Length: 108
Image (tube, rainbow, N blue to C red; front, side, top):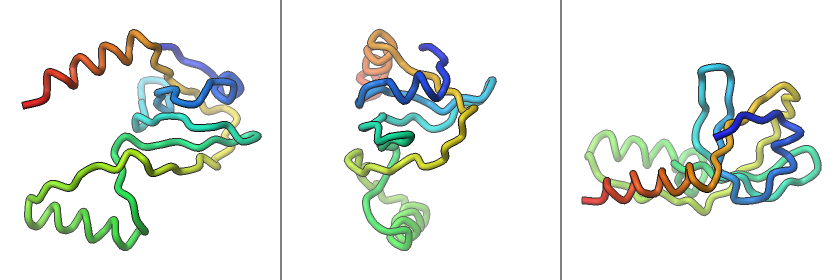
């Protein structure tokens, strides 16, 4: 994993796995989509498709019933924060392989 600044991040290709980073604090894991000017699309690892009201209904149902809800990793968002000082922790291929290995061990 390496830490890069916003300009370097904008040059990263789609499918880059990353976290927003502030010293000692990592944001959610995301997958970068296409860069569009000074902005980019991303996919959250933990996401549900639908409008905000639907999100609240889904979460409430999960809390109340204990029911499982499948993740939808095809929902793209757009960054839009334009914080020039934001830093990013970017995973390299070896980090991703290591993560996949850990996740495979979690399959029951």
